[in-house]
Amino acid sequence: MKKLNLYITPALCAIFILAVDSEARQRMDEPDATVIINADQGKETISRHIYGHFSEHLGHCIYGGYWVGKDSDIPNTNGIRNDVVDALRKINIPNLRWPGGCFADEYHWMDGIGPASERPKMVNTHWGGVTEDNSFGTHEFMELCEQLGTEPVICGNVGSGTVKEMSQWVEYLNFDGISPMADLRRVNGREEPWGVKYWGVGNENWGCGGNMTPEFYADQYRRFATFCRNYGENRLFRIAGGANSEDVNWTEVLMQRIPHRMMDGLSLHYYTSNWRDKGSATDFGEDRYFDILGRCLEIERTIDRHITIMDRYDPYKRVALVFDEWGTWYDVEPGTNPGFLFQQNTMRDALVAALTLNYLNERCDRVKMANIAQTINVLQALIFTEGDQMLVTPTYHIFDMYKVHHDAQLLPLSVDTPPYTFGDRSLPAISASASRDEDGKIHISLVNIDPGETRTLTVHLRGAAAKKVTGRILASEKMNSHNTFDEPNAVVPEKYTGARLDGDRIRMELPPRSVVVLELQ
Ligand code: AHR
Image (cartoon, rainbow, N blue to C red; front, side):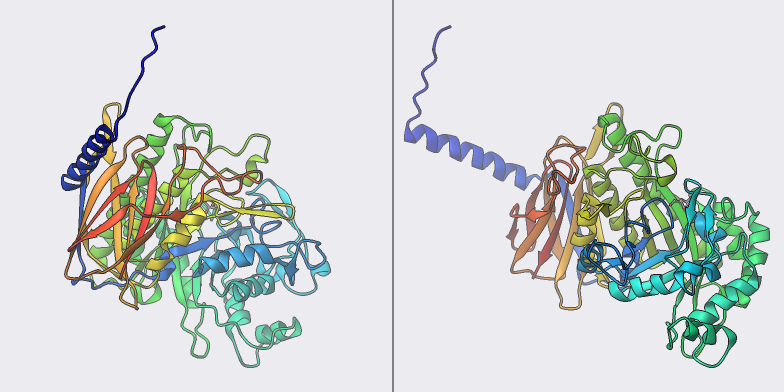
């Protein structure tokens, strides 16, 4: 073969650099996408509770996830893993929903108090048919919330429980005076009431929570909620068990039949999944990648349909939409218990989290709480544990990067995005959300779901001036990159240097399948 000798002189080199540079500048001048932020028009606050979590007695979420027991060799404080508490404290989790899920409607809280050795055992019929020994109960959960510095969200049992049982649980947790339940709490070692505020009245009562009609559940809700009393200064925030994804009739009937003064929140569940063929969490091609991100973006249309109904019955937005179960749902990892819902977590899941949170921020006038399912070792988990090891997933990193939005003022924005096209279908490639925190810093979270294209972007900042821009990026080598115990840092956020301030504009590039959070000062 003929050898080709290339002689590159310094002049040639300079011409080449100039050409590349001018091409890059031209790309920046004609960006693929534009975001306009109206920084002087913020009205709504993004409740930090949108960044909430959900942990059920399911697989290794509670047992092995949080709870190892006081006698474990795994470093713990009163039976709760220290590594997990440290990781969750770092992302300031604002609330934790417990004990289910479907488990909530077969859980009898009195079985989970008193000396652990005397607690009755039960079968966890929903999740693997395993024996639940009730060693993690009310006191352990409240201790966990105290260690995490987070608000408890307790979901009571409507499906197989009684009004009396639920009413007594509230009294046990919240009453300060002399009463049978407050006295029992003291016998079990806790003098002061905890003052639990967020209270779910059943879960998925259209399905695992009792297969009820919405009319029947609405009546049951009125009955149960009546006896969930306020004690002392504490005001309960009572949440009605809401609809499954598209079931707008459930929302309609509840909004119609439950007096709004009795219902502070109405829940909704939506899992991002291809229910007919859930597929692998890690072994997928672009068709599956596109499908899952498309289904995730359907959340917007679905929630908007429920909000439209709520707006009709409650135009002043007294009743909050509580999106208390969301996340991806795939086949379980090969060789694991099908009832334990353990799945890996890749960059695709990080994008689902980022898109969902951007959208929930935008709807913060109605959505006041949301809970990703589930925190540890189950579904779209933030943390995996294995024996004494722990790692955090790409989804965890999104919650870390996005914590700047907690209780910040939402800044209205518009996005002009190119499509991400796969075959004959397209999705918007770019998503964005912006907020201003109490120190005046502006944060912009930006997502590029396109797995193959870097996108240039110009952000126009109207009504505010910035002197400095910094940022963090989460990106990955492949669509299915993920963290393992052998390689726990395969997907981690890095410093982002791809943005430059140009007057009231920020010019930047978003690499394929990436999430960037900018800070403007
Ligand atoms: O998160 C797993 C299950 O999904 C919950 O127990 C239930 O509420 C939902 O169907």
